[in-house]
Length: 449
Image (cartoon, rainbow, N blue to C red):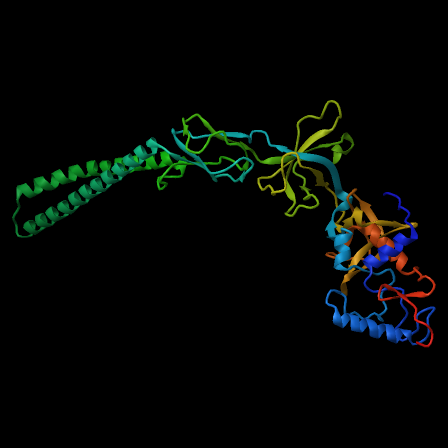
């Protein structure tokens, strides 16, 4: 960790004035300020009460300045947080002692870069632009194709033939049923008509043919619908081109309204990225296929971590002896772009439980010990100084044995500045003829006034 820098005493004072909304060096309520006449505390309190009533800009107006704050506490106003760029992170449970962190970057997964063609001739209307992110099955272009209209015509004819075949079969079945009823009635009175029997027999013979006609028409419809399915299905007025894989559009070489042949490339897709890294030879004994792994979202990016399946290469690098490893997942967050660098965190096998951990950037060297600053649960505008009892570290996170709970927020950016304020708040002394009140330097009033 970088050694603390030295600041001019005036820098300490400026930092305290920027961070502190309530002074930590003021005496208890009712006591005189050091170096000033008795009774000034009441006057000072009255003045500040009047100021607070007339000003709405102070977010800490109404605080009890006489209340005793914990040692090392620092008030952080909204303006101080914004001006100093202070950032917070939550304490979480992590298997720090079983985490291997190695650097890497996102790359294109092999076999996922695709050239998308129309496969039927037509006039093209692109629906995406270069650098657009698409998902599998998303419409990326629409066509106006004569062949599509021809298929629609054939489909309509096949549906009409099916209706006709079904009607013809239903008519034959109904007529046969009527003839059989007449035959039964004639047989009941001891009479029979040969022509009824002959006609019924002919209808029975024709029924399989009618069934075949219905099945053939249905088969033609099924074949045409299957043929049209890759372009949006038979219900689509115009054929559409769908993205075969999820990815990012690299280029769209066609212009709207251009005529495209079946083999012409309409656009190229850069496939799903994967995270590539290399495990040093010394750690290879701990690595195995499928270990829980993730790449955390970089600072400044919102969204979830990139988690997936760890894959191992079949051979080590001949020069470095490191083994290439890859983290793959179909669910890629928006921030994961080709070339984006990061750290692969591999959770190694073992029995050590997860422990409370905070980012290493939260720690500040204070003399012979390390400290961190956690938000006060009783006052969200105040942070408390906590001496760190550290455990294992993976280079990015460190285990904290006590003084913090899961979900507590710690300062991870600007921690050194806050540390200076905490160290100075208990030792800062007002210049002769001045005193601190409410975090502000005031000139002492003369005796008897």
